[in-house]
Image 1 (tube, protein in one colour):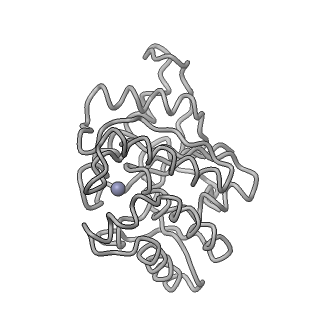
Image 2 (spheres, rainbow, N blue to C red):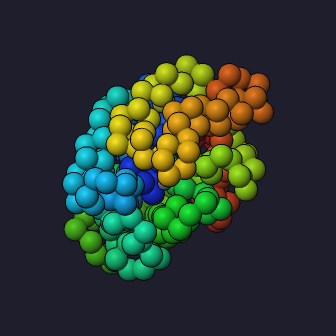
Length: 233
Ligand SMILES: [Zn+2]
């Protein structure tokens, strides 16, 4: 399978589903990690243009840990809207990735970049199947299952499916730690240690399903997207 995971910011996928992506990769699937926003506002001092380049490299380094491809829509932080520009960029990314399954942010997550990315990604996954809707790459004519990843701290999210990431927990830690520019920033802005934060949530989701570490998902339940087999590892 080809797996497309779309996060809002360059480190979101790592925090919410890196253990699952690591399992997909380990089981022989092709993983594409896309971040919609370039992360250019995620620091106190580093200038925006410089920061987005740093974060692009950090995302690539993280994806490389599991042999995944890292792509970006390169939209500035807090400048994504449910509009034509964002959707067409997402459609093009989707068509290039040619996914069989997709992971996207939950629509109930905590801030607009996450909620807007969620809507744009789902809309694009339908629009990308239409041959007469023209972008650089031809249509990927396949309606695929879409899973919402967990929200930050699991708030307003009732999991339906769990992935046991006990064996890939160290890989998840390693991938999060690739986002070096965020360690100090998240401490200052949000008062969190991002590795500890993510692993605590994974431990909590693990507790819910009887394993050491897990990640949680919900299927987007709409016509044409309901699978008759399990897609998640
Ligand atoms: Zn984010």
